[in-house]
Length: 359
Image (cartoon, rainbow, N blue to C red; front, side, top):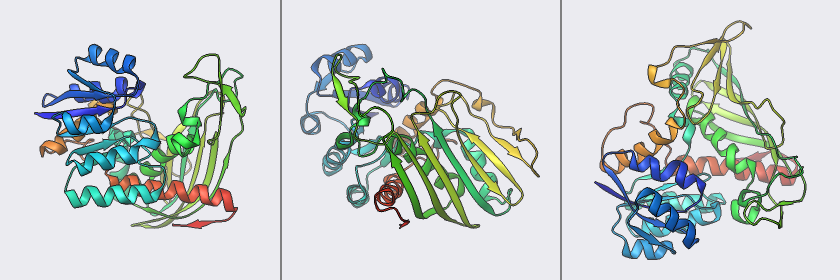
């Protein structure tokens, strides 16, 4: 039985970490840590977690845990993960892994030196469609890959009542929509293509209101210091040759929302919508024709949050030394988190200096 401590008591802990771990027959959430006494006590009662702590160092020192999961604002990923690894605990961390690549490099080196399990929450790897896209693309079904379109468009950021939360605060998040969704798209492009980003040209904007209603403290305003929208044109080197990636992430676009990746090759293109499981489909287009759906396993049928539960199960299985079935057999490690962090940092650097940035 894997004993897990969950660090962080936000909404994502309730949606993903605790229920995902508790769904595994060989995992038990034995401790919960969070700054808010009211929130951590309410979650502990709701999910039947026996121990609670207000400080992660206290949890690591006193709770009998084999592993921890981290679901805090990004600023705390590095110190919490470093302390957990130093204490000999396996670590699952939300994305982006850290605020900058020096931190992610240190965590990767520490995890590998301690020979501990280390994973990052890149959810969309657990789509059946993502695995089929990887198989087709790396198997040469499209000929040489030429271009990738990676797109996230969320709505609502321009509404007068649009709330600002910790992700809009650069001190806590490092990046806004770039870190939140851009990290996912960078990882998914790497995962499916087998390629690595080599250079980027990027631009980041804060377009909405500079002060917005505080989503965590009603009646107050909160300054927005992180990006609302980011675009980048990137160079990708893969096993089949070089390609380009056009990445766009926005929290400002009105409906209909568009969230997908397209992989364009000499012999056709693949369209991969992404979600937590509500949409798990893959489309193939040939010779300029409209894309048609490809067959996927029956398990790919729409199911709310099925990727989240597969992701948490993959962490438990890895800690216990069990093999995980597809699409949970290629979870993202700290190496993948570090690779994505390097791309985010390069995009931000390019946005600042106005020119291309090599990785």
